[in-house]
Amino acid sequence: MAHSYGKYADFEGLREQAVALRRGGYSLRQIRDELKIFNNDILNQLVKGEPPPEWTKRPRAKDDLRAKARELRLQGWTYDQIEAELGCSKSSVSLWVRDLPKPQPRYSPEEQRALMNAGLAKRRASENEERERVKRAAREEIGSLSDRELFLAGVALYWAEGQKSKTYQRREDVLFVNSDPGVIQVYLAWLDLLGVGRDRLRFRVMIHETADVTAAERYWADLVGIDVSQLQRTTLKKHNPKTVRKNVGEAYHGCLVIRVLQGAELYRRIEGAWYGIVGAVRPGDLSNRT
Image (cartoon, rainbow, N blue to C red):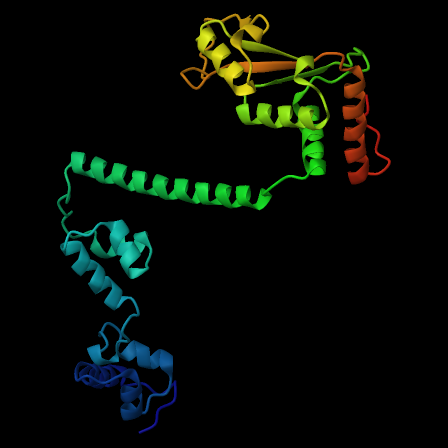
């Protein structure tokens, strides 16, 4: 029997039928077809308060994940471990398992610290290995240096680290100060390339007064191949008691000062070569000339 919206005088009777069908396991579509009620609002009113049968419920996509999360939590897994295992968010894990008892720690605090330190050591070892691999590959790329390459490297090195003449203070002296032994060795090789004899070089150590001055003097003399007695008088830096120095220990040797006697002409060559490098990179840019 068909019905229109205004012809439900026996609404209660229809509701009794709809409820009976609902409790009998009928879906809304089946009730609609059985009672010939095609108005969705009326149909929903007739079965209001009656839960749908289980077979009509669509399974939720996360039901399996929820069940697995609860199973893992009962096995003692942490939120982070469950999150990583199931690929879901930590907030979802918390929602699913928060009613379950918190698992007992698998490790004591001492064991946890030991595991953490072991993990950090492993990661640092891996990072160090990668760092050394990159540096080793870069070093191998250099190979041997031509005279021109060494010349250009030396010019750039001096202009970065050496004393430079200023418009307000003309000092065409070749004076170089550095604490890196590798830098000192490259610089000396460059001076050899330029034909600067060792008889024109003067060496002096600069170091904090609280350091091992004697050991530092011996270190630099051995590095440049001279006797300690050939070093000029060491310059001692006064120690500020308010300053906490980090350059301490056996590896600290201070700085070595290298002066080239009668170096005015050499300084001009260095300055001109540097401007040549700048000009090759930025033609016409003379803004940094002194």
